Length: 389
Image 1 (tube, rainbow, N blue to C red):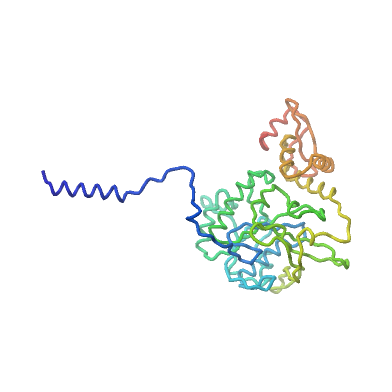
Image 2: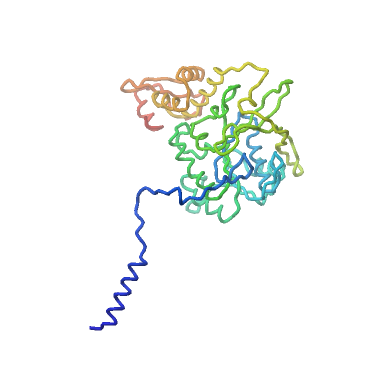
């Protein structure tokens, strides 16, 4: 027996047991509060845009929401000043737009706003098996994060419209939250402010602007800050536009800035709009966006919001009535208002097999691909093609 060799083997075996790491086990991960270090919110624009957080920018059509976001991007890329005069450190910007062309719309607006175009990156799609395909968040977010890390110093991400990130039903709370999470994770990993642009229903003067955001309540629930842009009449009867904070979980939730949309020719033959900022204004978003010269028509506003809801939920589908009503309830729409809006839209209501009722939009309200409803015996099959009950 070779005693020294045996001793050496024993020592090595013992050392291996000592340095061998414990296997990582699946299960709930808990963090003790004493092991955490309190961290302040990191602001890109103090009180307005927080790094690593989701922001919703909402407003009715024509209020310049995209132009406002482009103005923010220009401030970031140029290291310019925010509407309150504070300086922004220069950084890079990602823009994913499903509505506007980068070359003939977004880039001219960026140049009109004084952006450094070399710091702006547009999400133009993704390459799959050598073929260019549209960007799909559920599939391509990791690849986008890798690109963003390669670029470095990404400080602002703009998604227009934010509903583009939701592949399911944007009025369903669970689906919307699940779809938004990869974007929120991307912003957190990049330490970048994330702005999602969306629409809110017209009318509704005097109501809470946050409640007027179209779609699932998850959009405003997940967002840490909700900004709203609107045009109202001042006390002297003049039109004025205001960007206001409607909600903030991490800072002040009131106050705003006046603005107007101006035109510029940044390059010969290239015309574009940009945001010109005015004075700061005090008050809550509800107060600032109320028109002192007009009678509030809350019922009409609620009906408009319900109509917007129905157009988005029904689309080209034949949808079970119970599903529509359940989603409307989740979106805070009263059944009476829902039915008034459905009548105004001319929603088709048919009974299918088993006595179940189904709703769909008339062909004139949607695309020519809307299913034919003459044969109500096939409604169950049509509904299963569109969505489950």
